Image (cartoon, rainbow, N blue to C red; front, side):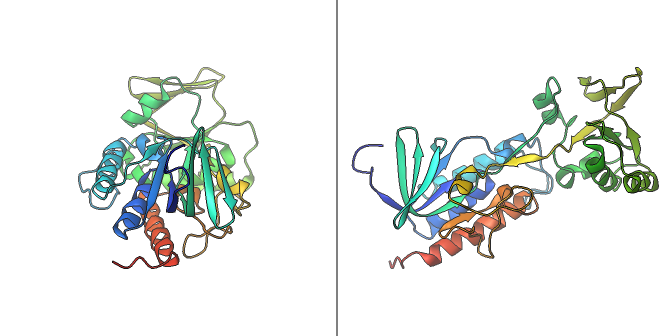
Length: 303
């Protein structure tokens, strides 16, 4: 970045424009702070066909529609996301410096809202299947919508059993489809049996056919599911924070204090990349806390 803004020092740099980042931007703009919002355009929320547990939307809301509404709200206060991917974030004296190719931003404080990236199964057409609900990514978000369907849970068997038992809340037909060949522990076998969860070995293939997921076993058996929940984990996008020495938990997610500050002074984080329940409502709450803490920490900006 060159020109008169090259050395401008913002009050706060927000990285990521999903629900958390956009909420933080709205708060700080309304606090009349000088901020910049940088976004790589890969919010996890874009995967949501329709969310029915997002507060304030009794008829449901699509992820892209929700993001558009949040962007429009930020724009009313003069905030527009800069499309860029931050390559590096470093500390220089009393400020943070973020680089994205030839662009560079300086800020006193930083809020990270970079999210996580889901690990998806290798199924042809998986993105279209997510859009139709044949593949679902969050049982807490939409288990209710899958009620009474034939549900498959695909992942390492010893981990998938717990998710399958939770989904028995919504359906009598829940099956674990192992993604590995590890033997199930006796406790997990008993847990599945007691909950009425069917256990299947690793299939030869999983494909989408007429809106259903079909798992074909080595012996030729075919098992059809109205919806399939992959439980393959996700990768928290914490690289920028780790480079600054931020602390993570055993899941690789950032640990923050009650004000959403990481172990690095002046670096805040919110949303799915933080060790917490990965929900839009939680991300929005994180953002409100982080933005208010940032405002209170900055010098007063009297009218």
